Image (tube, rainbow, N blue to C red; front, side, top):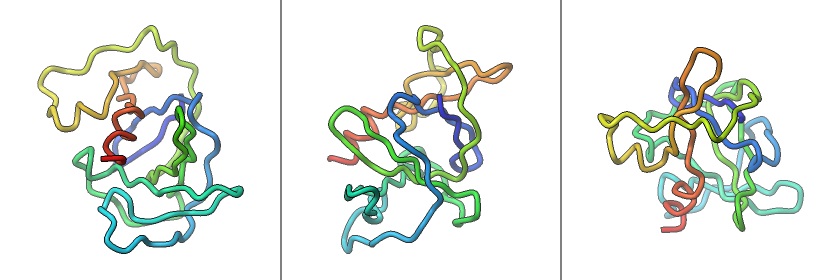
Length: 138
């Protein structure tokens, strides 16, 4: 799993879907696009949509800093660049040990999470890339 931060909170991404991590760089804005799709980026011959998942998760996006990264994701038939506050680590996590989400979690937010994964003493939400992509396509 790739461990990242968004809105000051830790999240995990399945490393099997992560192609690379790059430093934040300016991208081409798309006029009239929703806030979750602020623009596009050319990377290694691909035109990638920039995905800002902060609004989907109910998070306030921090200002761009030196730690801001774009995680290039290739999931099923979709390539995209996910805007994240920071990238922390790669962790070996057994997907068979995913814990269910707390019942009290806001359903609008829970929709984008597959469950909780153990990283040492912490439980970290695992982002559901299928739901994230479905929301971007909608």
